[in-house]
Length: 201
Image (cartoon, rainbow, N blue to C red):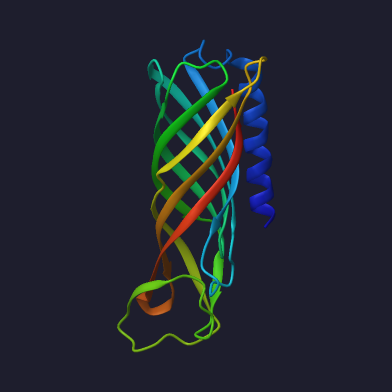
C-alpha cells in the first residue's frame, strides 16, 4: 500500500506541474486529463468497486482530436501500475460543454504478490493452466499484470479560467496473470463498468 501512495504522490506532483506549464484547453497543443473512479462489478465480487486513478498527457492532432500516453494506480485485489495509450475526440465547438469519446488500451504492471485461496473468488476466472490438478490454498502468487482495453464516453465542462471538469463512463475488459511455484500459471479475466470524475487543462 505504501507503494501505491508513493505513486499517487508522484502523479499528483506531475499533474500540478503540467497545470502551470500548459496553455488553456483549446489554445495549446497539449491537454492533461487526470481522473479518479471506480470499476463496478457484480454483487458476488469480493471487491465490488475498486478505485482507479489515471493521468494522461494528450497531443492535439487536429482540432478536437488528440492522442496521448498515461499512467496511474489501480487498487484491484493487488496494486497495479497502468501504462496506457489513448485517442480522444471532443464533439462540437461550444465554449463550455464538450461531449467526447475515448479509446484507451494498455498494460497493468503488478506491484505486489497476493494470497490465493480456493474459497476466495474475486474475478470471473476464465482459465487455469497448470501441470498440477489444483494449487494449494493460501499460497503466495506473484501478480504479473495483464492487458486491458477501456473505451468510454463522457462530457467536459470548461470554466472561464480554462479548467475543465470531466464525467465519463466506460467498459473495462482486462486479463491478469499470476505465477507461482513449479511454473504454475493462473489467469483471471473480467469485465466491469467504469465510472470516473476528473479535471482537464
